Length: 223
Image 1 (cartoon, helix red, strand yellow):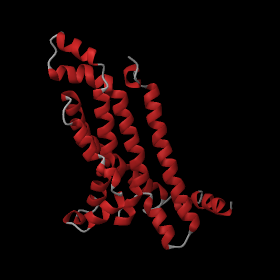
Image 2 (spheres, one colour):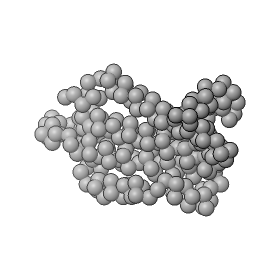
Image 3 (cartoon, rainbow, N blue to C red):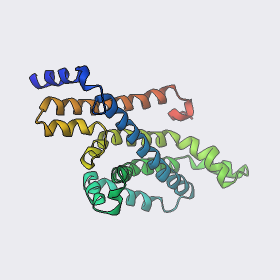
Image 4 (tube, helix red, strand yellow):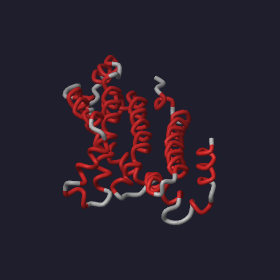
């Protein structure tokens, strides 16, 4: 318990919360990096998943290709990107590596959600004279939204946990607290950094759960 108590003492020391290397600044960097990567991932994965799910063709191939990202360690992708011209773009390698990591759950959940929409409802919408665009946005998307949002939640939590690798490429975020602890041979600081990352991930999970509970019925999967 000594290590945990020392980590708690480190966390509650006001000096560790102030300045550019303080917890507050590192937490803000972590939040911004996570949000940017999540927005980019959604912009890449969701349109593809929705279109392929609506057409019912090519989705399985796209999901399988995106899932290759799960088999390749994000750290390995980051190291390879640092050796390419992308490595000159500051946070570029980290952003690309994290986006590749977040795309699979977004693409898979959105595509599966689209394909699980009751086909009789789709046929009824078509029989009413709806165009493909109207069926996509008025019927299929609302009914697939619960699974789609679940994919966003999974991706967000995974990004929070994995964004610590930014420190290995010289970036910011809570990972800098952990790497600094290793450099100083300070086990309490390393543990404190890990606690911060875990707590942040739990907070993000809780926010999504709260939004789901307070959201409209169709966003919670009610029909």
